[in-house]
Image (cartoon, rainbow over the protein chains, first blue to last red):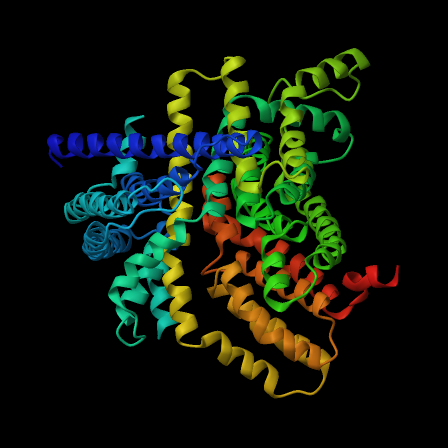
Length: 170
Length: 427
């Protein structure tokens, strides 16, 4: 596959990694800070709400990371098969299904985001707008879809999945 | 039809989260599921404070691995267990029980122990498949050793004393520890070269090490030993919850790692990346299987299974047998907390009618549904252990069968020897 495509996917992965790493740090520090707020009875709203907000990017943008690295949890019967043809056929079917799944959920995520924007709903403790975590649901599914397109192209061109390319490079 | 299409997708290698979601999407119209809720449900499911424990404990595991805390802990365990053959497996069993007493959650226990003790086991020559299988099985102790989230749910919804449920689950928990340790003692002879662990790293203490050296190992391990003290002390003194304990443990592990300069900035980036990948893979399953759970509830599948199980017999023994079979089936397809919330109120009144103690029944029900975490297609413990131990499912299945068999023996004992759970009533 063209070098530009690989470079684009690598950059997209770096962005996803940055979002998820920040989410993890937000969870770690806000939950711990929430304990301090309660223990010392500080007059501050519960910041642990941001930890719950961070669950959305970690789950859905993280799912896109898993797609890129082929790290989704799956049953690996086909991988044990000896027939290369069978493996390629399965790779193609999985790529099509993943793309279909991401497309459906990107659309559903957009509907949810649109609804959250229109309703102006906010979370209880800090008043964080609900559309922020919902946006990451939508973004994660779009990112997953982009990886899905590249995976499909690789399957059609009978190339190895992205994670294996990275593995071989190491 | 639904089960066969689900199995086909799984065999093809479609990610588990995606396979469950696709089956529901394909049947959404037949099940009267609103397309909007297909998106809202996964989002709502993960926007949950108690689920934060999973990524946070995974992060703690990564920090402990790379920060050298696990090496220090295993060195201490070696001091006390070096005379036992294949000690790391026994350490995994005991450490899971300890984590169970911290988290109350099976999946969180698997994640935390797999990321720490699992790494050391692999370095000592255990095959990945066996390490992951033992890790997945010992995760059951996360729920059987009190506190236990599913037992709290059962007690709250059925109206039984949660304290009594916790006391009742102690003996089954200890039984499970003994059974798993016995299985490990037998299988480790086969999986290890020469039946002995290989000792790859420095912290391992020779059996003849002098008291000064042993003391030095203990002193060096103080920061690592303080971690469970901090977590357990914090939870039982009421300062923080299990989820908060994960965050406090994470800050502590991060501070120790930075202060002892065990990890550079680029190592920290890698730690965060690994923890994020492992967390996302697990959370995606929890998020997208929630719609399948809802579909099953809407279709009244659990109710139908219960009806069949309770309609044909007047004997309490046959009733318990039928309920166990039904629950094992349900545990294969439903998440633990959802299954407990659904099956508890459905079955507990029938059990009381048969003269079965509701506390005894609760422990049996939760143990049974927990075993479902080892049985595909919805086998969270297997998948988390696979991810944290970098094993393949096919490498795990052969070994998991042993532990599944052991769990079923414990379940049979809990079911047909009520005194194992109701002993406290005779005190």
